[in-house]
Amino acid sequence: MTAEAFKKDILPLNKKLLGFAIRFMKNIDDAKDVVQEIYVKLWAMKNELEKYSSVEALAMRMTRNLCLDKIKLKKTVPLNGIIREEDADENTTNEKQQELNIAVSRVKDAIEMLDEPQKTIMQLRDIQGYDYDEIAQITNINVNTIRVSLSRARKKIREHLLNKYYNHGRNKNKNSIREIL
Image (cartoon, rainbow, N blue to C red; front, top):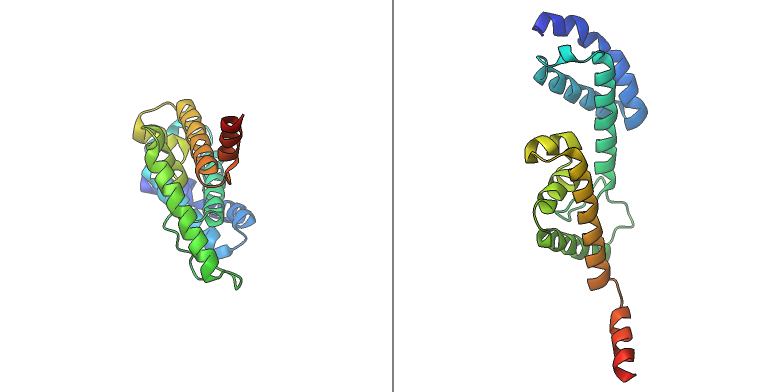
């Protein structure tokens, strides 16, 4: 696709994409950023656009997915354990920040204990925010295999954290009772 064809066929989608992104992002500046990223991605794949029956549908799907990814990232705590000032509310205290730092450290340690490729997949998806197709291209692994590996990795982390830190001695009590009997 040439630059002229891109301007003629893709750029006119701006109003639709922006309106769609605003519904998700609830902020016009964030929505504009999303649309800009979509145009960059579309331009990068300009030579592949001809194989799609509807470039508009592709652009809308890309916009939706990017908005959802950005919303999800806003709701998660970064693994550097630092809450940005604009994300912190007045109730966030030093004690809560310390608890968060401990929790983040525990999650990082748990991720490091994973075997490959689960460790890499979890890093790419949950920390760096790549979508499944991008992870498949990076790792050369089938998308379904990626989904299964990610699910198993999350389950391992959850079990590890629950057993090691949040079990509150339940297993110790069971073992102690068994020893007594």
